[in-house]
Image (tube, rainbow, N blue to C red):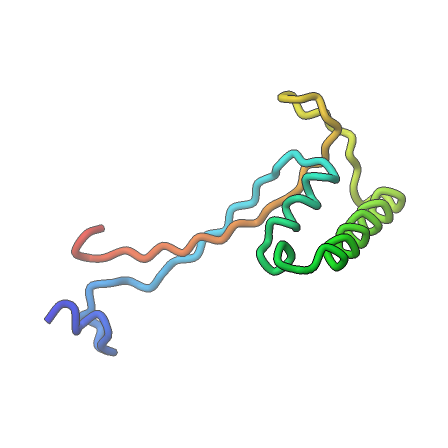
Length: 103
C-alpha cells in the first residue's frame, strides 16, 4: 500500500515535494584549470584533438577578452601553490525530498 501511494495523486502519499536549494560558492582557479575543467566534460574529451584545440583557443580568447574588459582578473594568490587565480563562482542546486516515514 505505501509503495503504491507514492505514485498516487491523493494527498496521503508518504513523500513531500522536493525542495530546491541553491548554494553559491567560489573556487580559486587559473586560466589553464578553466580549460582542463571544460576538457574533462565527456562531450569535449571525446572530440577529435583538432576540435579540442579549437575549443581551447576559443576559451583562452574569451578569457583574454574578459581580462582586457575588466570582467575577470587573475589577481589573487592561491595559498596552496601561490598561483595567480580568479574566484570562479559556482552555483550548485540541490533537490531534497523528505519522507514522512523517515524525516
